[in-house]
Amino acid sequence: MSYDDEPITLEPYQVAFLQNRSRFRWVSKSRQVGFSFVFALEALARCHLREKQTSVFVSYNLDDAKEKILIARQIHEELPLAYQKRLVVDSKTELAFESNGANKRLSRILSHPSKAPRGKKGDVYLDELAHYVNDREVYRGSTALILRSNGQLTGCSTPLGRRGIFWEIANEELRKYPHHVRQLIPWWLCRFFCTDVPRAARDAPNLSTEERVAAFGKSTIVEQFDSLPLDDFQQEFEGRFVDEVYSYYPYELILPCTSDELVLYDDPTSMRAPTGRIVAGFDVGRTRDRSELAVFEETSGRFTCRMLKSYIGTPFVEQEAELRRLLATLPVARLSIDHTGIGMNLAENLARDFPQVVPETFSNDAKERWATNIKILLQRRDLVLPRERDLVGQIHSIKRRVLPSGRVSFDAERNARGHADRFWAVALACQMEQVLGKAPSSVIGVRVLG
Image (cartoon, rainbow, N blue to C red):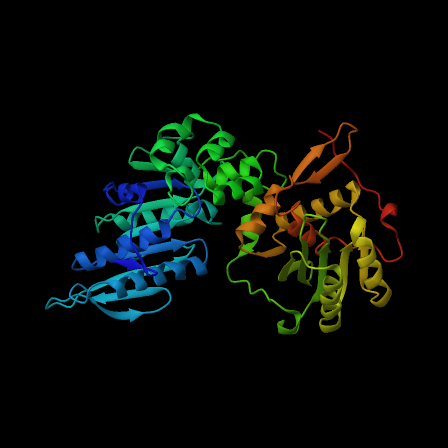
């Protein structure tokens, strides 16, 4: 059999997963190691090998849910006709197959974004469970579905901090879960990332991250290692649950403010007529960083994201032209733009022609004010963000540090994508606006130390 015009060759860890017959399978894994594929493969095989079967996928968002159905459909098309069951339901989130026997019984594959699959008995796959807003509810609503069907419940995810039901079951630090069989899949077990899988499987666990990347990493994994802070790389590719004690925005604060149903626009001309105020923030990329634009609609103090756009390697004259088009197309009430360093000319040029453009200086005091305001919005659930892993990761990467002088700084470690530039664009857009006619320096703030 083939998939995407290539023969299907399973990795040893994929075979081990398929051979695991325990009722509860629990997989901590690297990103991009092929578990969406193996889920779809197993579900399709069981639909064809059993007279009646139901497999339910629960995914991080709707796009991921649709992707698993697409994979299963493609594999079904590659099956020899003699073994194919007739496909009688074919939608973006469901496949149903009719048995070849006299009873014409149905086998189904269902796929949902992150919600509890109640009322559907069979096998349940909770993909990227650690990233769900409602992870406990989904897990709690899934466990009973395998009882009468003699099915399996699979929890599978890249880690997301030492929190949530996925971490609790994977590490058993709070209590024991004796019926869950665990599997760890770091990057060095995948032939697409590793130069010598058998030797790495033996030696890599005894090396530091830097040493094993140097010894066994292909160029793709070396690039990821060079592009991410060490903790992020270990969490994304080595299955390590990173302590989030230093993050100013814990995941429990961010995730409830994300929505899979939020519609983002790619261009200002395609945006529907707003019912609230349009506010925007623009963080100007430094020499190695990208510029980021964030556009929000504000209604009664609630900020809903409408557009996020990155400018990578884009000349400043083109960035300015894009911002002018935004200001000429939409009724932008305020565009806050980074006025620091190389952003000075861009901000001043736009401010001369558009009075709603507000140049902003990235001082420690200003960043503290913006970061604190974002935290308040998150706590009040007055910030609506897209459910994007990169954006969630950038917000979570912001750390609050007390400097030797006693002052406070807010920032993220630099990586190949900059200093959490998209977060700062969001913070600029959603900031609490100063009273007209008063300079920021006239605002008195209170800082609690300790």
